[in-house]
Image 1 (cartoon, rainbow, N blue to C red):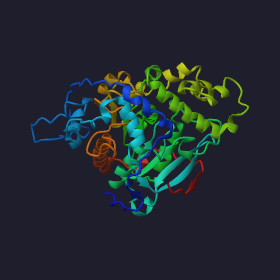
Image 2 (cartoon, rainbow, N blue to C red):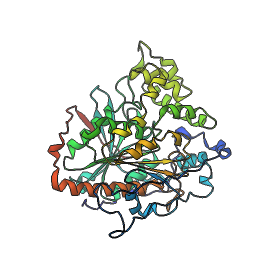
Image 3 (cartoon, rainbow, N blue to C red):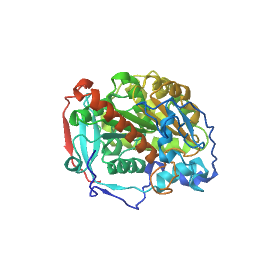
Length: 443
């Protein structure tokens, strides 16, 4: 077991984080409406290790509460999670409307204070990403402590409240946690005329290999939100049975980017679209000199002045990553097509009323058909909201306890099988030799 954490780098705070890219959203939110869920029934085979999840011999396990839509070949193991036996109770008023809940979470959720140490990792194309580790963990955690990689959403990073809360919870359980800040996000350096995209998994692949190279005795897991979830699931599908991660969780995944793009231009969603476009423009302007003189299909003025995410993707992203059009980019970057190839335990958590990751885009049939995948859909939650549970309204999202219960379950099971038959050398992990530079930062 990992050593208990020291309290010094993790200090709870009542300070509230106001997301800059959503600063203009609150006034118009109260007029919006939300939708309801449609629970599905599922069979209850044994979990991954074949052990019963609850009850004695011959006893049927208790299903997760009926207020939740649950799907997947091994959904019975979720019945063993305490947090899923109770009904989903959204916080009154705040969660009465999907837009109010989304914006409230971005504005009012508390931001835990955490001392972080930044490591800048040089990528294979001379780009750079920033890895934020909890300061002091190398001194207090054993070398074989499980490692959790966190992937924030579009333009997000280690300063986002939902990321900090998950980091805090995992660290309190003795896990080593690192936030993967994509190029340009959370002040991550940009050194080439290329950012990141929904389709590009190369940086994540290098980060995973880098982490495994540093902690070869550890099991490594990943959690992704929104666009970060899309990238994570695409990576899992590309790696198939060669995946070196031990488990993963996807939250608020748009899955089908064509459907998500359609809904992004409807009604109040235009406000989110403009806010995210503004965040992308701000990142771009900090590094505009890198993009001067680019030829071919690039439309730099369109990206620099983008009024929507689609404008930015048309002017820059789709060209950088070799797509014929922005529609071609969205069609071929969706993670919904990757689910069938996932070969490690994956939990997907979605909100039925998510305005940015539409419920109709969830690949339910593929998730049910893949024995490695599980799905939970809550009736409410908005996007990155989930203002529910014991810590609502200002504390961690309702999802955090479920994520940790799932990861600990998979980790304990992994240790059982690892002790019998698996060593790190047998994983054939390719180590990356690209240089990296560590920079110490207190946040």
